[in-house]
Structure formats: structure tokens, C-alpha cells
Length: 181
Image (cartoon, rainbow, N blue to C red; front, side, top):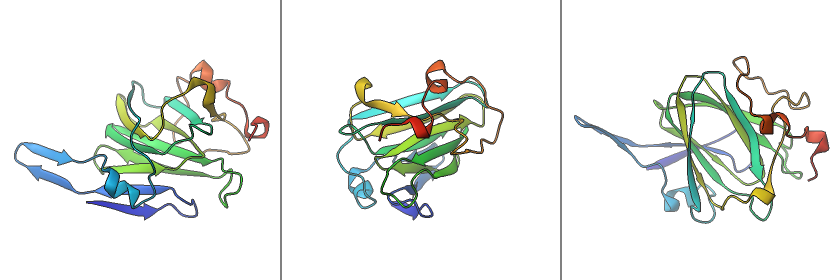
């Protein structure tokens, strides 16, 4: 069974927790259940599942999103290590427009972040070799790829560790003031 917790004033954003089944062999955990997630706002089916491994603690990826008509729901789950996971609300008519929400996701707590369309997403690895699995409701389309600069002073994300291993692509993402909404 899945349970959901609202994320402060971020409409549609949810922290999902779930039952884990343990026995002497190990454990079983259901990551995605469309019927369960529909209760929390997920629309559509899974079009893509991605796995990322971040080798070094402090490394950052983000802030990424896809634009309409490929804006998507994401279900983000840490399956190894731990990450400081961040989403930024870029929905112009939202009460939380240009505010960010952060949460630690790790392999121990069995939580996921359910992110609705209109949010940019990024994370910082808190441990070496941290892995995330992402379920996406839309296919990736390079021409609709977007995001914002993770160091934008207008957002002022408080990353817990010194930033390391930023990709050239992420460094060149625009500041919020330069994004065409």
C-alpha cells in the first residue's frame, strides 16, 4: 500500500511512502503502482524508466525538466546511497512559483517524490555511488528539454555539500529571469 504526504504549499507535489515486505531472504518493495499513484495525482502511464548512478559525494545533477506538450510526472526513488533531492516550481500560476522543495531520499526510508509537470528537478549525492530510479509519464524529447541554473541566486538553493562535478550542460542552463515561460 502507498501513502502520501503533501509537501507544504506545493500543489500536486507528494512524498510517497510504501509498505516493505521483509523476511529471512531480504525484502520486497513495490516502486510503481499506477492505480495507487492515480489516487495521488499521477496521470498517464509510464513511458520511460531511467536509472542514474552518481559516483562521488557532492556531485550535482539538475535542474532539469521537459516543456509542454512533453511536461511530465516523475516518480523519483533512491535505491542506493542517499541524495538531497530538489524540485523547483516553474508553474507561473502556482502559489509556490519560483520556490523550491527539498528532501533527503535514501535507500533506507523507502520514500519517493512524486513530481507533477511544471517542476524542474535536480539532486546532490550525499554518498558515493548513489543511485536513483525515475519513472516518467512522457517520452524524453530533446527539443523540449529545459531547466534552470542550479546556482541561480534568485532561487538560492541551499545545497548541503560543496558542489562538485557539475556538467557543462547544467552550468549553461539559464537563470530563471532568462527562461521563456
